[in-house]
Image 1: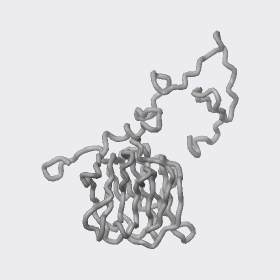
Image 2 (image 1 turned 135 degrees about the horizontal axis):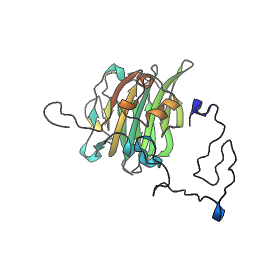
Image 3 (image 1 turned 45 degrees about the horizontal axis):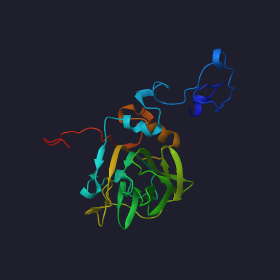
Image 4 (image 1 turned 60 degrees about the vertical axis):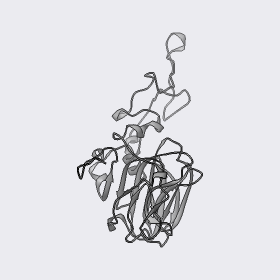
Length: 266
């Protein structure tokens, strides 16, 4: 439960743990053989399904958001280019924005998830490092989390740029949890393509640092989303976003269906 959902909440009995306490006591268990029996597993119908049929295990939730994902193989130089529109925020040190995506990466295969950058001009980039942790660049400043995300399971990642009293900063989130903040650098991305699955190598020409893994439900907002909004969006496809969540949304790539645009699917 979040925010106002807890307003006026007197008690909550999840009945899924023998140790958790909320704003209540456990109550007294009555019945023969010491009363009801705790079933603390998530399978064999021990717990209800979450909305939209989500598995109760957080690591499985992304498998049920949308109907698929885009698969990338780094050795094949796989990536998607989305053009160089200025709507994709050329200057991180002066513009608020938020980047979000679901990502499942192969362990040991470092590479770029999302970028508007090249090798020497890392303006906007979310990537995995050799140790499989998630990192980002914002205006050239490095944001390094210690969270392993390239572990063959789904994770929701987000990079947020915001104005903090006249100073622009960037924040990195994993699975809706804040990880690291840093002051934005001065490196800009003017004229650079926004890429999914890779980063430009030099001068916006050939690519490098391609990712191996799957990416889905990519969103680019021209505003700084709150942590609560990032958490909410992580559980939705485009059609499930609220009107307010679509405000300042620049582009959304579900990457969960093929569409024929020139007579061929792809």
